[in-house]
Amino acid sequence: MRFWAALWAFWILLGGWALCEGARYVIDAAGVAVLVDSNGAVLLEGVETLYAVREDSLYAAGSAGELALYDGDGQPLGEARFDMIADMGDALIFRRGGRYGAMDAAGKVLAEPEWTQLVPCGADAFLALEGDPDDDAADPVLGLRAGVAEDTGYSTITGLRPFADGRMPFCDGQGQWGCLDVNGALAIPCAFDWIGDFQNGAAIAAKDGRRGLLDVNGNWIAEPDHTWMDRGDGIVAGLSQRAGLEVWDSAGRLLYAIPAGDATAEIVGDCVALRDGDALRVYNARGRNIYALAPEALVFPGAGGQLIAALGPWGSASQWLVDPSGVASEARFQRLLPLCADRYAFMTMQGAEYYSEDLNSLQISWDYDSARWGLIDGKSRELLPAEYMEIRLLNNDRLLLVSDGAVTFADVDGTPIRVWQIEM
Image (cartoon, rainbow, N blue to C red; front, top):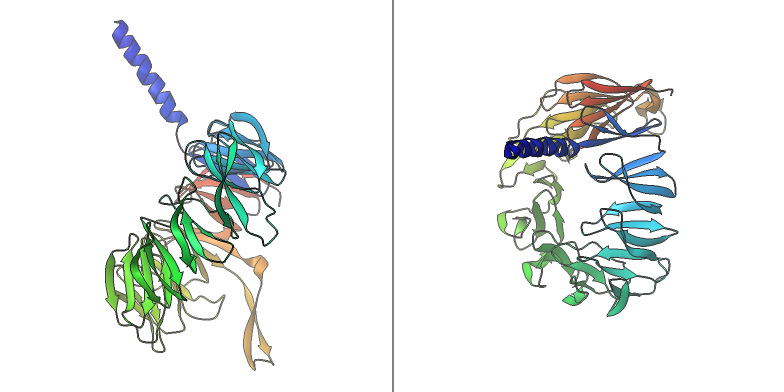
């Protein structure tokens, strides 16, 4: 009997813990600053400033210069007060009095705010700078462990960046780039024009004015003979005279190469757009040309693998959706803003025609105060009319709607969950 009673108590406790660990949402607009759960129940209120430090679990709240750390139930953690705080994985970095320190997720201070820059590199370990951030001199990189600082023997003129794949790119006092490892040792010699952040073991780097792909040991995955190279959603693309357009996955495995001639290229989500004098052609991650437009057109990443295409004067109904297979919607919008998979905010704005003598043509003067937002799905079907001053995505499955007299917490279909009346 005691066994079943204990088991029942365990399940009640587990259920309560699961409820406590549910999604949290920051409502911060038009004077409303509250933390709510998915049903709109208020967990934290009565603060001037509120933002997520770590989604669903850690929040900064309070007034300017007097922020405190709170958990997902709106309970304060620790006694530290700060100007700002950010999650950097192994630790939370905070600023107080113009200097940076670190704390753990329970609010315990790990490093006092004595540093002009601080980056975590393992359990209770950091790289730090203490020089003047406004001068141009190279600052010694210090290793900080258990509050004790030691000089790593290296200096940087570009500051510290977060570690990725155990590497931190930096520029030395001679203007050459290399990488430090998490122990503050030199992992890649300072022999490059520039090194970007690593992702899945690969980073874009420049040498002698050309770009290529580096591995974490400083070896070239793709030779530095590319005039252009950039990252997108899970892909890297580059242009060279040797191979035209080359596209790799994020780890540097070649996906495809096609001739490019004199075209320029740009990353659009997980696609690449090639632009020449004849057309703008969009290629997916398999190298298939899924869509073509006039060369003066623009293409932007959409939601859920879709694209937003634009062609026409700014402010006109000149934007539309293109799905991943290249099928375009017939509906046209003045502006589209991707929110989450299958949801977009669309804008309407009023304008008046006038004749410009300088341009010798009719122009439109747009009334920015008239801009209002509505909601559509990925098939361009209207879910909410354009009557909101702002539509914002919260934690990927809720919406914040700001109208002339209310702030509304809603689901992704626009159905209200909780409403706060406001005075604008």
